[in-house]
Amino acid sequence: MARGGRIAVVLIHGIGEQRPMETLRSFVDALAKEEGGNTTGNWPKPDPDADLFDTRCIVFEGTRTRPVVDFYEFYWAHLAEGNRYGALLKWLWSILWRSPAKIPQGIRFAWFSVWAIILLSLGLLLFTIGPLQLGAAPFWIWLAIIAVLVVVNGVLLNTVADAARYLDTRPSSVEARYAIQKCGVELIERLHKSNRDYERIIVVSHSLGTVIGYDVLQYAWQRFRTRYVPQPLNRQKAVDTLRNAIKGDMPLDDYRTMQSDLLAENIGNGNAWRISDYITLGSPLAHAALLLAKDEDDLRARQRGRELATCPPTRDEKFGITDDITMPKPDGTTRDVRTLDHASPFAVVRWTNGYFRSLFALDGDVISGPVAPVFGKGVRDVALRSPARGWLTHLFYWTHRNDADRQPTDPMAMLREALALDPGREVVAPTPTPPPAP
Image 1 (cartoon, rainbow, N blue to C red):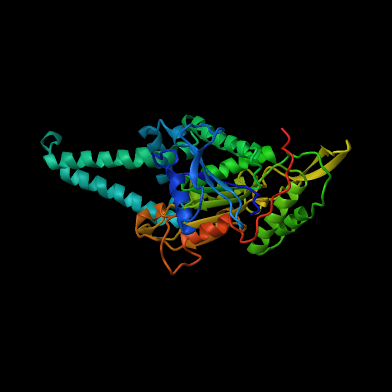
Image 2 (image 1 turned 30 degrees about the vertical axis):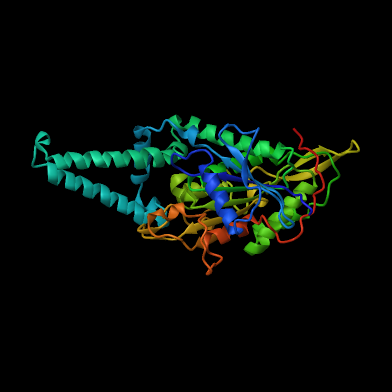
């Protein structure tokens, strides 16, 4: 049995008081059940390079048609501790106080609903307590107030506050956001330098983790895009194809094929980058105009300025999408390499986004939505068939179902296709690659 081409899968969890390995175990268990529960060797193993002793690497042993797969969790919840009501309320107010015209269409109904609930609650409070003196208020009113405060503490401070902590741009939140991003980039660095010589690295993220993963990919790409090892230069044909794709209207399937070809071309030319896919589930990036910018115009300006990466990449008006760098060759001479610039991680990383449709914020996943209209036509959006009803659908992106009526829009079917861990062909041991340049 030939084995090789080892794969790493990094899972980034979402908001809430997540425990280390809790999300990763549920994810890997669902994938194992998809394979009939016959996956051998899917047990946690110590990860000597991990930042936390509580995290482990879960391994799927290789088969004739699937290489060894190592699953890692990027655990960041401990870095978002210290949430405070003041910061949370300021962030929520900054969203609620915006003009309705600046609220993305996909969540405008939810925005109006929140305002309706606030006004209705204030009206009922004034109507109930107004005629009474507070000291003489019935016991049940005080009991109801205490119950509401308990719920608010549990729902807001322990969950939504994580989003405020990461997305808020006030100075009090900058340190926590930087710590999370730095930890994520360092994990990507360790995987690239690992002696396991990964052929592919796949990043999967859920909820707020999709925003964190988006940032981590951008910052990690800036470090790796110019890392080449000395070797002869192959032809850089795929770079020209990318330029044409940006200028024209290349079909999505053709663009994703071009991304794979460009990644292989970069690796063949000695580049160290190995991340091939980014998979987002229940992503609030669908509402980036609200969460990452002041409004739609501000978001588009930041994308045109290439501060926020798009898929396909946005061209610089003067220099395009590449930089020319000089690298040494094995014979001591030099070569010129056209390397992709800082705004081009999604030139080589395929982006797949799964979401559950929302019906007026009453059913489905109002947090998520299609990402391609926001970040570019190179993103593959998949509207999934939810295994549950109501607001809790946000939690069901990797739930195994013993259902004979499986469709491509089932969450696990989409995940298996996007991960492409088992290509269905015999695995051939890869040719060893030199270590990346420091």
